[in-house]
Amino acid sequence: MKLTTLSNSLRIFTDKRSDLRSATVGVWVLSGSRYEESAVSGISHFIEHILFKGSISRNAFEIAEGMDEIGANVNAYTTKEYTFFYTKALDYQIEKAADILFDMLVNPRLDPKDIETEKGVVLEEINMCEDDPGDVVYEVNETALFAGTTLEMKILGERDSLRSLTAENIREYMAKNYLPERMVIGVSGNFDEEKMTAKIKEYFGAMECKNNPLSLYDVPFHKGITLKKMTTEQTHIMLCFPGVGIEHEDLYALQVCMFILGTGTSSMLYQRIREQLGLVYSIDSWLGRYLGGGYIAVSMSLSPDSEEQAIEEALDIISGFLGAVTERQVSIAKEKLIASLIMSREQPQSKFSSMGYNLLTLSRFIEDDEIISAIKAIDLTQVRRAAEKYLILDEMSFTAVGKVREKEEYEKIIQSKINEGDKK
Image (cartoon, rainbow, N blue to C red; front, side, top):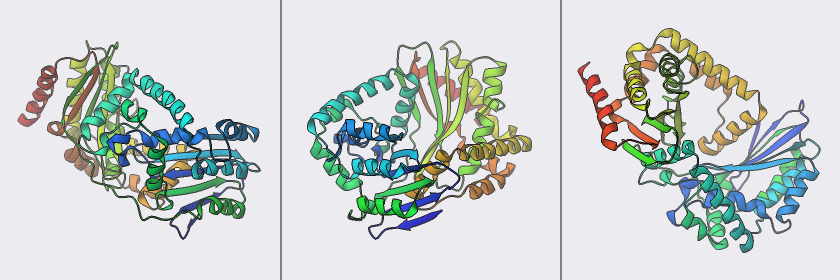
């Protein structure tokens, strides 16, 4: 692993793998809905789309054909905190693939006709997501949790803001966010390091650092009940609690908690609510993590006829977790967590993505051995301490999408379980 920082603050890491016959080039940019203003909501994701429509020297077809001509894959995605562009090609073609990718990023065409056409594509993407209750409950949940901050804004944006986007809006946003100090470039696989470094410097070396580094606020958490009616066969529910960010010292203890609580078929929630009672087909627990904070989530989809009992059972398990968790469950969860990490890392793309993300957001690499050591160090006392600190029913946020009941009915179910806990 080699890390180089150019004079303009652009960070470049290279991971030479001579045992491979391909290579991957990735560009991470601190560009996401968290950094947007409401008037241009969705612009980060839209830029991800529009850059594929052409550069000054290549049109959209020439980009697509150019990649196909050398057998390369190219893609991108946008989150609330960053956008990731990448291409993968055979080792002897990777420089050509990188040239196309870098040209898209540095010399975007931004043709007004292309912009209008792509608006239709993104608007259809919004329609597709709004037809999926699983996507809707996630969006509704985060909008409620993060109300009053830019984290409540949707990655895809709002229809009105998208319709009003112009080439000038995009240029202004890119001038503020597509900067060397807000970017990381990584290369992994079998490649000529000298030639690839020269290619990166050719495109990005002259970019000017404008001293606009990562600057974030603490992530809020708003408890309450949020409901959205949809015509669905199931109700999609999320029970959320205040969590931690990717940099927090309690992160690994909470990950162990999640594996015990609801990740996998031996977890408490799965065994009781799915296997013993048959109230759901799937139930899961996981961590929503951002820089500066996050949340704990339990999600399930079920028939309206089953939801009252399922919610009650889930709240019983959550409130009783502290007293019920055992040494054996902690040991099993740690092994599962370590195994999932190691197995995922055997896929080169997983390790590569993690390296770039950590360098972009935390300004350092987190080695797998560091994570494994931290997980191994977790004990029953730490797990109980994390549960006591974070799994508090009175701090819960509740979101339901689908054939929802009246808000008062959910309030009654939840308050009843809070009262039961207070009497213990």
